Length: 262
Ligand code: 6PG
Image (cartoon, rainbow, N blue to C red):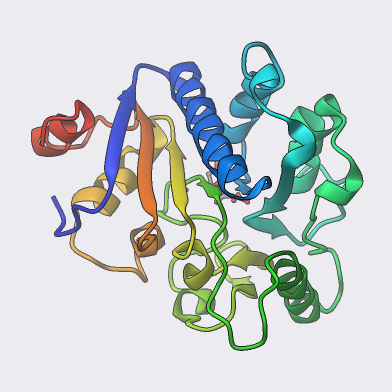
C-alpha cells in the first residue's frame, strides 16, 4: 500500500450500498455543519455514480433528515457545455436531486462553464466561493463541509486529469483546465481547495475503476499519472467508498483496512 495512511476505506457490496453509505456520510457532514454554523456547504461530484446517491437523498428516510433550505450546493467541476446539455453536471444534479427537492435557485451555485472565456468564468466562480465564505484576497482556501468526488478509470477526479496543467495549480481554487485527451477544457476545483475541505468522500464503483483505485491506494505516488492521489485533505478527513467490483485488485492489506482492521 502506498505510504499514505491518512484515509479510510469502506468496501460495500454493490453500487446501491455504496451510495447509501454516501448518503449516511452526507447526513453526518450536514449534521456537524448545522451544529457549527447553521449552513451546510457541499460540492457535488459529476459523472454518473452520484445519480444513485441523489435519488437516495430525495427519498425517505434521508429526505426528512435534512433541512434542505440550509444547504448550499456547489459543483466540483463542470463540462464546457450549456446547463441543459446532457453532459452537464449541473443538469444531472438538477434532474436527479435539486428539482426533486425544490431547491431554491439562490442555494445552487452553478459553474458557468459554457462561457466563451472559461478562465474569466473560473475567476468569477472563485469570487462566488470567496463571498460565501467571507474570504478576503490572499486568504487560504475555505473549507467546504463536504466535497464529493468520483474517480475516472484513468485516475482523474473532478476535472483534474492526468498530465494537465491544473494538477500544478497551488494558489487558485478554481481553474479552467485544458484536457487534450478529451479534446476540450473543463472548469474544476483545484487541490488547494479540495484539500482544505472538512470532509472529502470518494465514490468509486465498478470493475472499470479497479486498476485506477489500486494505483491510487497502493501504487507509488505519481500525481501526473494518477491525479486522485493528490487528494489529501488536511486536517480534514478522506474516505473512499468503494464497491466489491472496484476493490478486486486491492491487496489484502488494504481490504483489511476496508473492514476497519488496522
Ligand atoms: C466529471 C466528474 C468526474 C467523475 C468521474 C467518475 O465531470 O466527469 O466530475 O470526475 O466523477 O469521471 O465518473 P462516473 O461516476 O461516471 O464513473
